[in-house]
Image 1 (cartoon, helix red, strand yellow):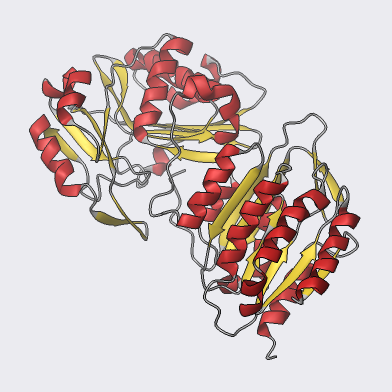
Image 2 (cartoon, helix red, strand yellow; image 1 turned 90 degrees about the vertical axis):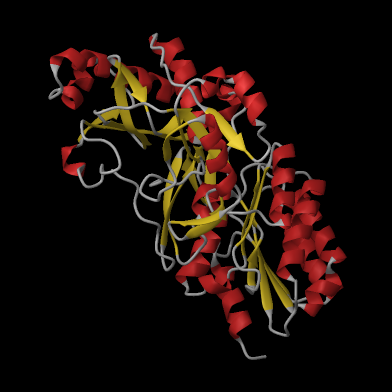
Length: 478
């Protein structure tokens, strides 16, 4: 169906898919083991919508990259050669050099539009048609770096896509969406900017994962097309689906595509890739970039953690939700990290949640040390005399040495003793797994050593019980 409106700030529904690729991997939450894969649907109240992107494998890519991938691999997989051309323009683009690399730019009428992961560009007056190259350069110059508001988010335009102008009369719609048990494929003869108003004319089929895409499968989508184009469009849909599967797309939409000299020609395209499949697709994807969602800008601390994450085989994630929040988290495990944030929100204190943080995959002591320093620095910034709480939580680890990861956290807590006291920080720990007794004992000793309020729990306690303790702490008068 058409993309839904932006989620309300009071409630965000997050589907978190946790895929464990090891044959015998499992996820342990609250002491209960679930075989992989596991799908959780969690309700996050009042949290930053960008958290949804951080928790999922589906990553949006630019239209330029969507078209590049489809064009390259449709020929390889289905023998269909798309005649589309496109060029990317940013602040660093030299138009003379670009024209030398893409000669068609100087010989054809052109279309230019922002390539910034937001839709409804035509309805927003951000698409210019039938221009020459000089007019394109002027259009870009006037809008590059200019802040626009889309869907309640504001950000400057930094990237454009330039393509040949293609006069056309027919506009078709095609979308493929990956779901839990297969793919939903939708097609319409009434595509274009009014697709939502004409959604009753969209035909949809569901193709289970174990079923191949055949002419018979595709037939209901194209049954009402004229005979002279039915076969061509059917072959195109099957070819695009082959690319979708081979490159691990999770979402692909062409709205619209048309026919040029009887051949399918995508005019507008949106795509998302499963970034957990990068290990097997890095050659096919080429130099793919996963931009941040429109309106999202990384802080210096978030950029630092992202850099750490890119250099390690472990996972290190950190997002600031509210710099003035009084409840901060440092949680082991992707599923557990969202459950902790969800619990704070469900208890009515999402506005006090300072961050989303997750470390997993057995990071070494030095990586945990650097990670914990950043979390603690943010959690203790600008003390105002009110109490704060730090949740060092997690489920029951499968293979991570709890004591080893705690060593890095303990070193960071020692370094930041003065900041912790100045911020009136109370620390709550809950963890289980390999060597957890040693890790918890070290944490208890640290509390006595630093004189910082520190409560420690093992797997005998519920995983999220410390969330209620933290809330009671910051809301108490003393």
